[in-house]
Length: 385
Ligand SMILES: Nc1ncnc2c1ncn2[C@@H]1O[C@H](COP(=O)(O)OP(=O)(O)O)[C@@H](O)[C@H]1O
Ligand SMILES: [Mg+2]
Image (cartoon, rainbow, N blue to C red; front, side):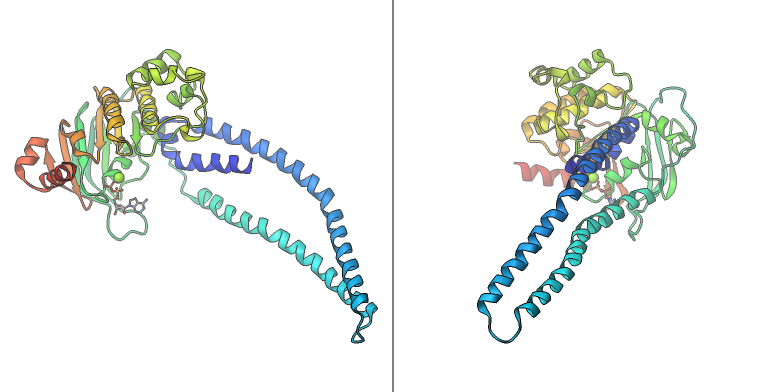
């Protein structure tokens, strides 16, 4: 039960980006309350049982120990110390031992409590997200503008992003490429405002995102990343995650578009099958497609894909890529892919190097320029063949 609650907390922390984007806050709060209540009742029962049995066992233990020592001593019986003197020494020792034992019994839980406390207070002390902002009346067209955007992580000397100037038209697919640590993930994480730019600003349909209510802002986007987050619930609940009024017909349509229909109908309870902790009953490719089905179900104008296929083997990558192509239709898409072959057809490719835009263009343009992109491309091509 303790493991169960730790798992819920961990899952929730790891999943917080997914929860924020898909609006699952209330669902998570209810789930947490439910499990805490069960844990509390269980702990109370265990504690009261322990309290009644512990003193008795301890008494029997110390009693038998002193009897054994006294017998041993009377048998040994040399003249150094009287049997009575030694017995009182042992008794005194046992008497001091018992409080010490209690201290030791307290120490473990105390240490664990302190460690847990540090984590919990760390979370509580984290800056709460802003609550002000304008609610959007309608669906965004999906235009994004980055104006001179810079960003530094707290405590890092080197900025993660600097001077980012980029405009993305509604429905356009822009691929972000570059070496690891170049700032690709940081850039896409600024769009749902998981982080706020240190300088410059980002606009959605011409309006600064800092003026838009976070719920409204995040309602305009779906995100699929390398670390798929699935919840210990049914297949249907995972696809419609965050929707307080799930629509079964739309769930099935999303599963079909993500090439998951056959997989799901093959499960014991089809859409009502419990998928287990983070989807352990599914393969990597199936989990990834479930995350894509969730994004399809959400049907948002902006789509963010952060290495959505990199954890997969080539075989399942192909199936997932087909599902992604389906999902990208008619949406503004920011896509990060480690395999350059999957983004060759993007409308535009932006190369990030040390937090700055090094090059921009189509695949053909960048190849003929023979710069950073061409270098990366040939490197990967050589490695694969
Ligand atoms: N949470 C974080 N805290 C501190 N530094 C970070 C964090 N995430 C990324 N960075 C740093 O920011 C830079 C850009 O990282 P990232 O955006 O993840 O690059 P990419 O996605 O291109 O691999 C790197 O130097 C990385 O070490
Ligand atoms: Mg990254």
